[in-house]
Amino acid sequence: MTKGKKVKAPDISGTEETLLNNSSVDALQKSVISYEERLTFVNEIAQPMASRKLTKKIYKLIKKASKNREYCKTGLKLVQSAIRKGATGLVILAGDVSPVDVMIHLPAVCEDKEIPYCYVPSKDDIGTAMGVTRGVITVLILDNPEIQELYAEILDEVKALPIPM
Image 1 (cartoon, rainbow, N blue to C red):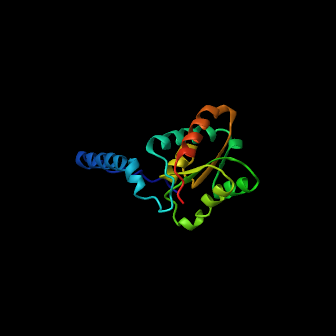
Image 2 (cartoon, helix red, strand yellow):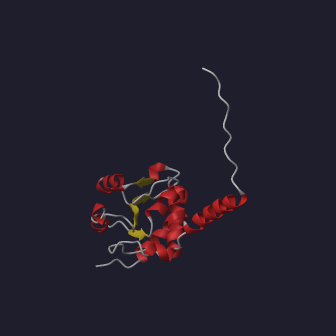
Image 3 (tube, rainbow, N blue to C red):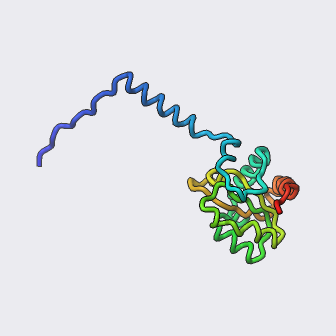
């Protein structure tokens, strides 16, 4: 076997390079979706929906709570089993879950167990707040002494939200 000559990649001309740069900038700008635009993707059952201000606080709480996995249960299966075992806390549900049949029963379970819950517009944002790349459809945040002040504030605001009948 002999060594062959390396073939150099052709240089990209200036116009093509600027086109690539502009397209990547456009892609980054399009990925930022406002709160109102995210609300267009939510399901019909996503009530009570957190306001923009409350949603930001909830994401901050999720970020702090996810540092200690003892106090933060993520995913439908873990949240269901924790509620069934008697855990109480705050349940955060994603409003853009498809198909909705996957989690349509969870608000009724929360109401039966008297656990406060609310919806946020995006499952991807919940995942981002937790530090994972995938979307998370539900989170149960248990009372944690490290984040007690923020938890109590958000819990009061969620309890004040009107629950649909």
